[in-house]
Length: 166
Image 1 (cartoon, helix red, strand yellow):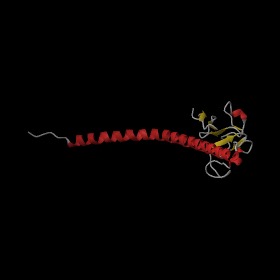
Image 2: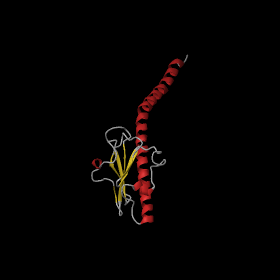
Image 3: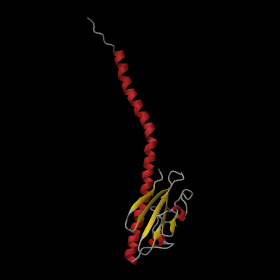
Image 4: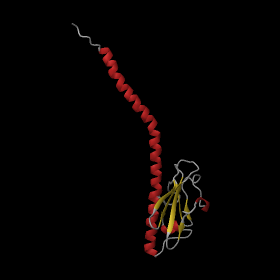
């Protein structure tokens, strides 16, 4: 008796399953890549604001050690000799603008973040005195009306006041 073996059918079925699996994976990649890129962009920009606020905190602590008071007034950042990571004023690239007391350092995308204005701050506005400070990082990395607002104070309490993505 001759055995029946259809190699053609077996090879077509063998190629069909991996082909479907590859197609499904490609569809998931196409759908997922933009989401992952947006998520990573948000995380990287959040990191910029948090790192720079931590740096402002350290600069304020150093200033206090040297002078016995925290830096305050309209020239806080000059007194601290602090500029966002990446260089001096005008040479850095930042999504966030920084506020401390009466001082303000704009971001390089000035149209996306307002200049210093008390109307943008409720109870958590920037402040600086001889005994304490609250500094803010405000950014808008997705160009919508909402702003991303982070704060840090003299107790090293960092907080997300407003999330730009919600």
